[in-house]
Image (spheres, helix red, strand yellow):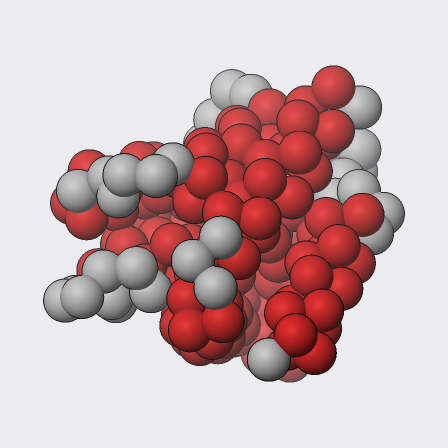
Length: 192
């Protein structure tokens, strides 16, 4: 049993201490455009900020006895809406700080000893997903790339739910440790 705890701690340390890479260059950085389904599918996996947010939405959702897919489904729909808004030329202010803020909030939700009601957590995560989608929408070109991005997001949410269930079986404090690492990563992105 101790070996499982050590493996989980090592995984969480690597996630939280790996480079603070962003999945995008932002609207002022001249983002490269990804074309096609496979580029869109890979896109959510290419930056630590999006990867952690999507995984941790799943980890947080795994704490719900019922409707574990509510927050991930709302996140995916709002992510798509943000991407479509961005692709249509609409801009949201503060995309990068909001993405960093999403990591801080989902980390805080995992750290909290009390579970936020599912609907409230899902709405908060859905709001942040608009900004994640806006960042992706600046970089993805075409409906095939957006479809791939959406599938990549769903895969990450499913992996997050599986990770959350595994962490919760290991020890009650492991999801909180994951939350601390993600919140610190978000803080680093916000201040960096």
